[in-house]
Image 1: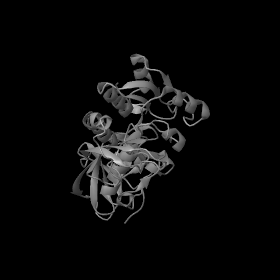
Image 2: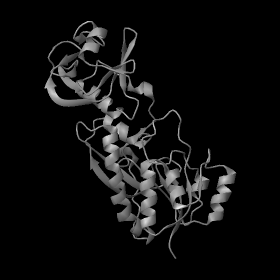
Image 3: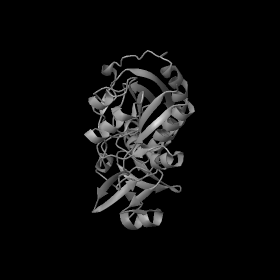
Image 4: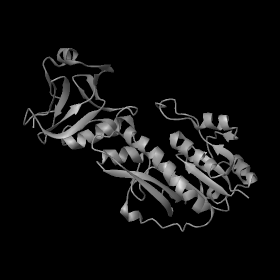
Length: 311
């Protein structure tokens, strides 16, 4: 008899997880997803559309732990529960329903970057590596025993979206490798040493505000961690809001030493930072409009803009 499952899924990684289960000949008896956030830029794939295409029953409860949903899940008699980038917490009572256990795919190399927005946090912290992990679900988020994981590199100029796109094939490799072994009982979960990692919370648009007292590398990491399709890094000066929507860091020395400034040079915007290093700005916007050299000079009054203060 082939294994049966209920799948909690969202985002492109949710699609990848469902496809891997089908490839492993799993009987998916229900997909549980949720509504899109109208304030979010929906740049990723739709689990709802996939469920409709595959004719798999699908629900979108506001609370997956409510009594009505719990009763429905119990009646399905599924062997396994899987969570693939589903954003709601599942209660201990819900996790206790499947006789073969409940498992979650997380976008980091656990126990590092437990919690929300793991890819963005890893880029923000300047990591050179992250990955995906499949683990057992317990009452604490992203803390259950590890089944398997797959690493991907983070290059110095990768954005969070660049890294996320690397996680999709990594998740495919991971699940195709470990699901058959998991179903056959050939994997022994390994406890996570939570002292070797940290828990991170969700990020809000205001968290993209640039602190110009930091180094060029640190500011560059913030910019690429929140670059589009995320809200972007920004600062305010003279009643105007400037967005830096991408950057490139090559360990270059600043041109205007001892100053913090934005300027135009050889067809590009640059930022000189407090540590006398600079980075190139991929796109500079002011109040929602992209700037070129002429527009920048009109706003700044010169080819230099001092966003914070002199060192």
